[in-house]
Each structure stands twice: as structure tokens, then as C-alpha cells.
Length: 638
Image (cartoon, rainbow, N blue to C red; front, side, top):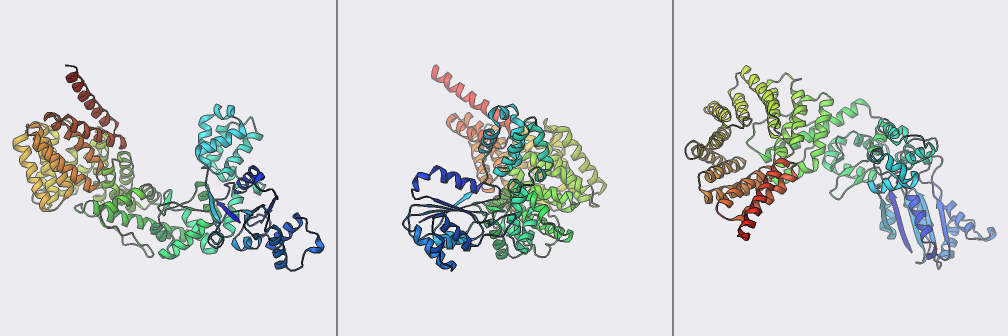
């Protein structure tokens, strides 16, 4: 006997798939097929008693009423004996659980049984060796093909943009797509763009219908109705979680349960096909299911507020710890202690921190927006602070700008001048990275003015240090860097002083002062960074020394310094600075006649620039590679 268990989310077309497969493979079952709707998730009745299904099978097999025993267990035994040696297909549709299925399994090993359910039916898989097939949502191309099959390619091609929007909004749910196709088919005058507008405004209303079989909310309600009180509450809480997915630790804080209990509830929701778990152990709720969950399980305000507080605290504290793993020398910020039942995740080192940021990035962005929307302004700007180094190392320049814009707005609503100065300064830095010259000046001058009002030398120094990065001519940049250095001296902030020393050396080098001011200041900075074990500062200063070496004709020293900087950047998982240093490293290789090595590092820099969306830098490196190819062709031709 071969058993296939087909499970999937509400509205994914498991019954259609089973019947379609049975029709296409009818010749493999010469002794016939049996089908029963077990009504495990039915809008108008309870699940069918297995004994009723057995009696229906006996009638379908032509057993005379007088031969059918009265006892249900005897009827089941008769059914198994009748089909034991036959090559038959049994389709057990819409099953509630394994207990409903077991009495219907035939004897012998020649029959094939296909079971469909909204539940995963783990007991059927482990106890009877069923082959599990999870029916997921459709891909975009499959969704377009479904609409084209129902509406015709001409109508689809005529409103391609609207079709793309419908596909996006339906998110691959075949039932949702079928409902949309049905409306468009019965109203040929209706523009698909108008239907997309309706779906965007009120998805569940558009996808509802008086016929429960053609209503997505009705289909989802069948799975929701089968949940326990605890499962239903967790289902509702997951719908308010910020971001597209959630990890187990974050879910535990959101729900307020222990890790083991959280895992158990999530597993049951996943078995009910209301959420899905990916290979990395992260849980996701389909957008349409999320919309349904927010209305199907109304949370009292206190429950919703407490859950949001726990999950936002989880993200803030875990991200704060991760940020300090990336740079332990940052000026500290004060967090509110974790609320009860919130358990921030413990991370061990830089790779673990970067992996966590990668996995949670979209959730952290959503968490900041959620915090701002709920007037949790301190959490809002602090989340931006936690993301700063990760965004910088990964080159997420537009996300960096977005979070600092929100952070500035939040900080300005707080009676906290320090937060206002910090957020304006780092907003200016985000504008600098995108080449927004005037916007950067405005933000940084605001930070400087606020710091002067507070008469805070350290904050003034930070503002001058960041202002130095704005000016392309070098002279005004050097003035701000020197002012920052003067302010830092005497404040007992050696890392900040080292940063200013390196900045003075860098901008002096850009002005051509390679062997005096530039090298002297950068070497002093490197000594401080090494003494205090600041790896990021060492990498930046080694890069500066490489630039000074190259432009003073010491190309071998430049290659060595650049190589050391790149090695440290790799340790820090800083691909943004790695790309810049690789770009600079190619030039001393060219000066030394090592064109193969120059070509290698420039290709790596170009690829990193492209990955980071830094198109202008990538094009510049491509031109450098073109010149190398041209020079080689000229040599070969001569």
C-alpha cells in the first residue's frame, strides 16, 4: 500500500491536485477508484465519522446490504478484505486528523491512498509510512499562467502591470487567484486595474463570498476554528509581529512563553498550515493569512501592547548586544531593562552578530517603524543606532538613510538633546554616503549647533569629525578634522582621538602632504588603535597609510598596508570598506607592473560594488579594467 499525504495552507488547492492526479493516472488502477470527502474542515458540518465513510465504500463496491455486518469494526474488516488484492486508488479528501484516516486504510500492499488535509498529519507519516507532499503557494509565473488559463492571454497582456499587482497581492494562493479570475470572468467589462485597487484596499472583503467554498476567509476560518484557545491567541499575536517572518527566540518574547512551549505551539500552527517554517527554522505567515488573523482573533489592548513591548524590547536588546560585538568602542547608550517574559538572544562573536543582523534585517526595519508608529520614540532611535555599523559594513546606504530619518523625527519628540545631536549627526553621515551634499551639511550643522548649545566638547568634536567627510576639496575637511582633534585632546577618549588623528592624516594626504603631516598623524593613530585593540580603527588607518605610501612612491609598502587592511576588514565582515580598499590596492600593483594582480583585485572590487548598488564606483573600476586591457593589447600588438 502506498499512502501519499497532501497538506497545505487554506486555499492552496489540495483537493483539486489530488483529483487531477487521479484523473491523469486512472489507467494505473484497473480495479477502480474510491473518493470520500471526510469534511474535516467543513463550514456546515462536523468531520465525518470513519464508520460512515466505510459504509459508503462498501456500497460503492456493490456489497449487498444483507451482507454488511452491523458492527463498525466488522464493516471495516470486510472493507479491508475486499480491497486487499485489488489495484485501487482511494482518495480520502479533507481529513481532520490521523484517527479519522486509520480505519479507512485498506489491507494488502496493492492499493494507493491519497489523503488531503489542512493538517500535516504527522501520525500518518510516522505510523503508516505515508509520503508527505506539502502544497505550497504558487510561483509568480504559475499564478500568471492560472489567470491566463481563466481569462485568456489577450486580456492578461492588455493589462500586464495590473496582472503583476494581482499576482503580488494574492501571494500565490490559488483560491485567491481563482476568486479574482472568477470575478473578472463574470464581469468582462471590469478592468483588472480596478480589481487590483479593490484588492489592495480590502483584500479579505474582495476574496469573501456567500459560497463558503469560494471564500478565502471562510476557508481560513475552518482551520482557525479547530485551534485551541492558546493556539488561537498565538495565531493572533503572530499577526502583529513586525516584519515578514520571525525566529523562535523573537517569537518566544512576542508570545511570552518559554522556548519549549513556544516551539510546541508554533509546530501545531504549522501543522494546521496557518504558518510555515523554512529550512533555517524561521516562521512565516502569508500576508492574506495575517490579514485574516488580525480580524479573526481580536486581541485586547493590554495583550497587544504587552506583546509589542516584549518583541520590540527583544529586538532592541539583542541588536544592541550585536552592535557592541561589531564595535565595542562605540559610545554607549542606555537601554530600558528588558520587560518580564522578554529574553534577548545571546550572540557569541562578530560572525554570529552579522548572521543575526542578516536574518533579522527586514524585521528590525519593521520594528523601528512599529516603534515610531506607537510613539515609542526612544526605542525608535535606538534601533537606528544598533543598525548603524551593520548597514555601513554591508553598504545598505538607502536603508541607513531611512532609519536615521525616522530616528531624527523620534528624537526630536523627546526631551533628550543628546539623542537629538546623535541622530542629526548620523543622519548627516547617511546623506554623505549617498552624495547628498547639502542635506548632509544641513543635518550636521544642526548637530553642531545643538552640541554648542549644550557646551559639550565631545559632541562638538563628533560633529566636526563627521563634517570633515563632506568636503571634496580637502581643505575644509582638514579644518574640521583638526578642530575635532583639538576638541578630543584632553577628553580621555583615545579611540575618538585616534579617529581624528587618522582623519587629519587622510585629508592632509589628499592635499598632497604625504610624508609630514599625513604619515605622522596616521602612524600616531595606528599606535593608539593597536594599544586599545580597536580592529576597525586599525584597518581604516592601514588603508590611509597604503594611500600615503602609494602617492609617495613606496608601492611595495602600499601593497603591504592595503593587504593588512583588507585582512582586518574580512575579520570584521566589512564588505563596504573591503571594496574601497581593493579598488585602491589595484593602483600600486599597476605601478609595480603586476597587471594580473591589479586585474584580480579590481574585479573583486567591481563585483562588491555591484552587490552593494554602488554603480558609479563599479563603472569607475570597469574603466580601470578597460585601460588595463587596452594597455595589454597595445603591448601585444607592438
